[in-house]
Image (tube, rainbow, N blue to C red; front, top):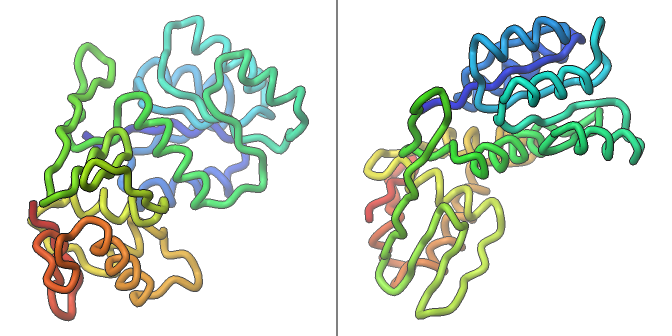
Length: 239
């Protein structure tokens, strides 16, 4: 199920940009521009994650966070703030924040942090569902790919009983293909989903990462059985 993200940010241009980037990634997004509005939206919408600015009109982000936790909301909260002093971060974590990102920030780093928070909260898998207003998830079984074993939930890849180190982009590439198993995933979709259309990243970057990934999980990388090339389009994962 699509994760729902509440953005509480009074700077309207920034809020609009965040919403656009999150929706491109497939999230459902609601924006609030004040602390009071944020509390109300959280109560009525039950988000899976809250992105919270500290410097808000009316009640500030610390007070918003405290009220959300007092009301029993256990969804992860990611603070976005121009306040980058250690004392501000400590206060945020003590108030119940799960992560703290100082402004200005990079969009890709922010998306990775959001994904990590949702994953730890039990969301983000194709096996996720809602029950009783809380987000729960069935654990994905490990995949057996020849002599390799892939555990997406634990971010582990083993081959012949030994751990295989995958750089973050290779792992996210593998995750994206596995979660769309049987589908043809174009290079442009992979650029969007794995690299976020970063400048300097080309379709050749995708091909290079696929080649490295095949070396680590395929018995015969030159004649792959699992990560298959779809000529002139992209790739398809086959278990």
